[in-house]
Amino acid sequence: MDFDPFSLAAGWLQEHLVIPALYALDLMQWEDIGFGWALFAVYGAAQVVVTLAICWPLEHWRPVERWADRRAEWVDVLYTLIARVGFLPLITFVLFYQLQVWMNGWLTDHGWVPPTLERLLPFLLGRQVLTFAIYVVILDFAEYVRHRLSHRLRWWYALHALHHAQRQMTFWSDDRNHLLDELIAFSWFTAVALLIGIPPLQFPLAVLLLRLIESLSHANARIGFGWLGDRLLVSPRFHRAHHGVLAAGQRSCNYGAILPWWDMLFGTADFGRDYARTGDPKADERLATGSYWQQQAVGLKRMLGA
Amino acid sequence: MSRLLFVLLALTPLFARAADLALVVDSADASLSVIDMAHQTELRRIPVLREPHHLMLSPDARSLLVGDSAGNEILFLDPRDFALQRRVPVADPYQIGFSPDGKFLVVNGLARAQVDIYDAASMKLVKRFPLASMPSHMAFAPDGSVVYVSLQGTDKLAAIDLHAMSVLWVVPVGHAPAGVLWLRGQVLVANMGQDDVSVLDPIDGHTLRRVKTGRGAHQLFLSPDGHTLYVNDRVDGTTVALDPVSLRELRVYKIPGGPDCIDFAPDGKLWITQRWLKRVAVLDPHTGEFHSIDVGRSPHGIFLTTDLAARG
Image (tube, rainbow over all chains, first blue to last red; front, side):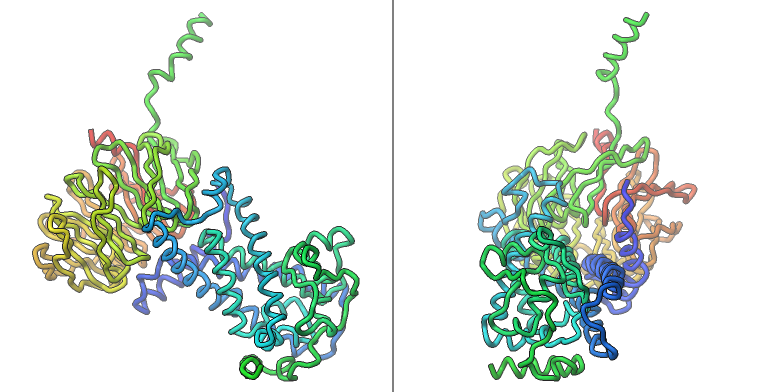
């Protein structure tokens, strides 16, 4: 009835790699969850390819900066692969699934109907795209609040500075986050997703969609969406102002992930800055140019000392 | 003449026999696929809340129950056309089954590690059994006195006395046990983490023997005539036919895509869900040939309306 290359690819992955591996490891009780991971790994891999296909030409077409030595980017590539294809989608799905099942089961047992948008607005049942869009808008607002707090609170910014330390910001830089920062962000996102009742299978898709637009907004590309467009969707120009050297630290601007509306609403939007130099001048040099594990260690030490 | 033709055409729906339909539960699509059995094409999809897995016909055959585990509800559908009758909130209804006497509805909560016994008439919870872990499939003793539940996460099988409402015994079986079947006074358990089926004594659960089928033995189905036992193997991608008396292997059918649930059509064909291929295979067990019908993602439980005629 419908051609779905993602499901077919995930099915192939499940049948030929995941299931034989689970069988060999005596973990066959997780075979159903394995298919969920296979789906998200396929979506994640496709997203990396799409991001590369869109952002790489843009960065070469209209670069903001040109660098002779691009070695500092490679660690960001590693962050991206871990976050989108490998370990994190698996943890995200398994944890979220278990949490939602337990919370909703407990609510059902106590005579409460677990929250879902479709129960609140029955016309949404079966309209998965529209429902998904509404969930994404709500989650994007939650991301704005979390991001603003991660700058405002001293200990949190000590971790988040890893993300801002990159002086060679490219589309790979979006996933450049301390593991603890990722964990807090995941818990926050999950708590909101549970409260609004997003379906388990839509949850990582929402993460992936947000991340796709966030990758674009980190691109080293001289691209704005025009006066109106910049106010509808976060552009590379808009988000670069957030990563500018003058905006690093506890008082920043343009926190929005995909929609600039929240910045406009709460007075943190700055549409006036044009393609600033990026980085955090106060951050430890190892956060900018160190290896993956050096960055993790320094980030943790800074947080404990904050 | 044309007036006569018009009248005949107008009356046709009154005499037309309802089309035979198949309902397939698309676990990863939050939907149910409705298939026209004659033309073997998907007609429509019925949206559900979250993640439906299994279904079960009520003892009076007036309702088809579909458990939506992550949606925490059971949908009651008209088994002839799948129109929604009602929705009942139930915690984590992964697998559902009526006791043969129709008194109880047993609900396995796989993710919540619990087996709930409901009074089937009132849908009131009678008793909850927390059982570690992942209760997945079930079978009943023919007199309805005991339900046997596979515990996929702890490699065990539990027997629950439905009269005393107590756990009779919990015994180790093979790895990741899934499908359970009562057959000729014995309990059969498909060991998904292995390549065999355990045969157990229903009195105390001790293993009498093991029968090799294929890697990832998952589900067991007895054909309506009782002449063939089919076992689906998830890793090997096979449906294995066994003699139900001797448990000797009769034939092996290669069914790719993680074969799972089966329903039997009146023409003798097997309708088998292929979990990872988004398809349902229609297998002719005589020729060994099959063709597949596209459905939603991760098709799991399946029901054919022709089962209603078989029930009389």
